[in-house]
Image (tube, rainbow, N blue to C red; front, side, top):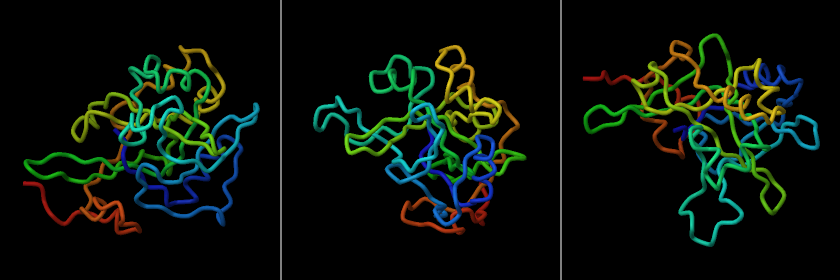
Length: 222
């Protein structure tokens, strides 16, 4: 799964957006080191045939859901079942987006404890996460991130990893509705592309923010 993200380096985010000809002015950018579901984030989508960058909410409840049917918003969708699930199947066909981030967090079990890890992509200051987009009745956009089975490198930490859209494939992901193209874009990145760093448990609390969330762990794994 993907349940926490770091979106704090504007220069890195802008590097990714440059691949799509989009601009996120620094004065509109708020560094967020510990982003969790329901937070406001930036996302790329195609609106009226133009590729745009918009603020959106991470997580949604399908508009057809009965009151109380979902205990919490949906914030992850599995790539393997996304074409069949009622909550996602219409969105993956036509309403796909990209969420630019600097890195994400994942927790690894060691005995009775969970160890926090920070994952980035080697040789890249940012990565574009594959997402599906829903319009809320009040007019704003919401997104759900897509996950895939983890590659052998990530398997050491967790059995899922976010779908990361390669910069060369971002235009296809946003504009090509052919299922074969969409499925090709959702393939997990191969092993060896990630940098995985063990960090302190400061990030465990969703109320904590700031660079301290990326601090190295001082406790060795036994």
